[in-house]
Image (cartoon, rainbow, N blue to C red; front, side):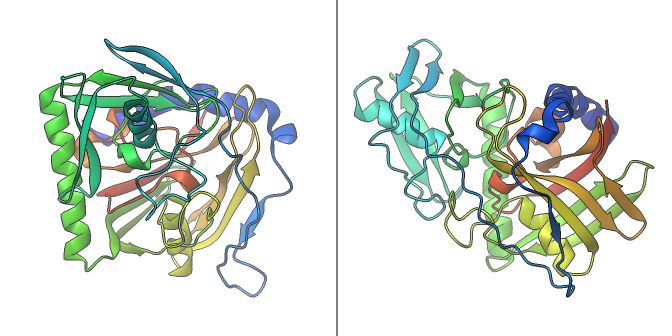
Amino acid sequence: MTMQVLKQAALLATVALLTAIVSIMAVSQSESTLILPNDSGEWFVSLDHVGRTVILPIRMTIDGAGTFLVDPVGITTLRPDIIQSSHFSVFDLIVRLGELGEIDLAYHYDEAMATHVIDSIDGEDGWWYEAHYSGGWFERNTQWMDQYLVKNETTIRLFKDRASRLSMLYEEFEEEVARLGANDGKVIIPRITIEGPRREQLVFENIEVLPHNTRTDLYQPGTITALDILLSLGEQGLLTQLAITWYDAIFTADPVDHYFVEHIQGEGLDAQAYGSCGFVYEVGYTRIGGFAGAHIHIPTDARVLVSPEYALWFWICL
């Protein structure tokens, strides 16, 4: 699949979200945009916004088993190395259903993929999932199930996926972990691309990404997210300015509780979001790229990374 086709598919997926942002930007954002770097030229992150704790029942549908409303009380995370104790993932929610006896669940932690894997639900294997936040829609994804953070109004569906797709996905997970090991635990992304509104293109290769701990309310210190890609580019002198803004809600999407990238400046590129125009992004694997799983509506400050193959930001106008 060509990059142009991937971008066209991603454009279709972002129309509703960006329209909503344009409609109520003034009433949704909390405080002002944070501009990096600071006046002394240092790249820094010192943020105090906090996402809301999950208190509402979460809706989960399991094909063939039914729909469940899961009370978040009592759920603990199986990934305390990544997720703060006050939050949990899609996988943690599934485990809770098993603990309650709602489903017969078998699972294990796979060392080669560094993630939890469902072996069977009610005696059947081959499970994958779709999920979306408030105001969103189901979309194919390649986000590891025990790293997809649950928020209020999250909706989840488990389904029997094709064996060939699961095999390909698991191969990519193993390659990602192997890439991390080959780089001595450093997250080094082979290719990062930023495309601007006038077809400007910044391409960076083999970039080391460091954590900046923008969301220690959600994740343990040291956890690397997609936002850290842009912050690392800035610290390395490859970007000159970045603007992010906190949104409590966006149109019907509530809660949102995330930072959104609204301005990127680098050599030959200077683009500020306005009206119906702005940046969207994807991160993942080239053979499951774009709308096939890399372009999903998890904000950059919540998209946990292991060691992806590529990252892309591009500009769209509706």
